[in-house]
Image (tube, rainbow, N blue to C red; front, side, top):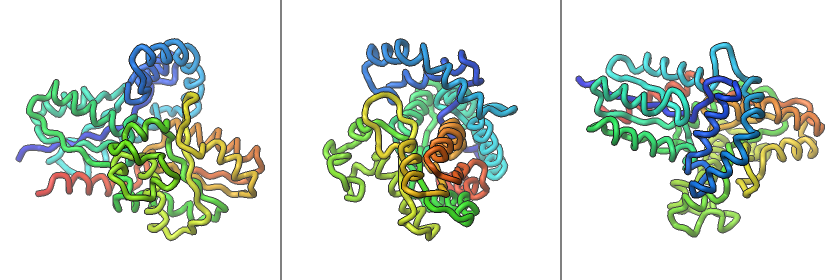
Length: 341
């Protein structure tokens, strides 16, 4: 029987926390038109003229704070997940890992699968929610490389699984111990997006961000609406865990530039919650399946500092699902249902 392929795609990381490697990573990331969605001349001016001369040094310092002896936490964890998933699936499958930016590349993973004679590949973007700057660009790149470098290869793409019971159950299981410790408030911190990205992804052209309740009203736009999918994850998590809804809120982190991004901003919320009397804050980041710069440095370090300085007393970040057994079970189930016998 022919083997079947599985391609896990995460976002990526610099090869090292050195300034040159961080600059190389940021250049590839920010020059992607799905990330900085401006015409090439404008994008090049912003990236080469305004960002790359200054931001790599700042980002390199942040990466130094989270880097481990084994390397980037994102890449190390993703490789561990790849190996464990391969072990669970057995010899009938070949599991490859790729990063949308830097190493290991999508091109190297697809070429490797093709060289092994694998024609059918299930692509699992490690992004539960649709955004053109993560899920969208990863899928587009995989399809582009397969068409160019792997003739005859058939890709089957796992759809965003933001409310898939397997993902929700894994998320809840990874948070279970923390939910029992006692807290005043649980903040869901999702990666942010420019508001214009939601409007561009809206197939109706007339739903997203048009009204205050757009995410609660059913629409075809929700299939590609990051914000609506984030709120759906929160609702599903609350149902799964049975936690008190009145002690939960949602925010968006990691904004860049001056254009309006999804609100409320997480860094503002850390301060506001502390000032409103929240003493014990619990934070979870469901848009990330692996801990990375945005969770370990931006939230666990800078977010904690902001909260404590504003009067909070205890700040706890729930780790991402990382290598949690329930998450590995979810991935295994995605593969086995993606390749029914």
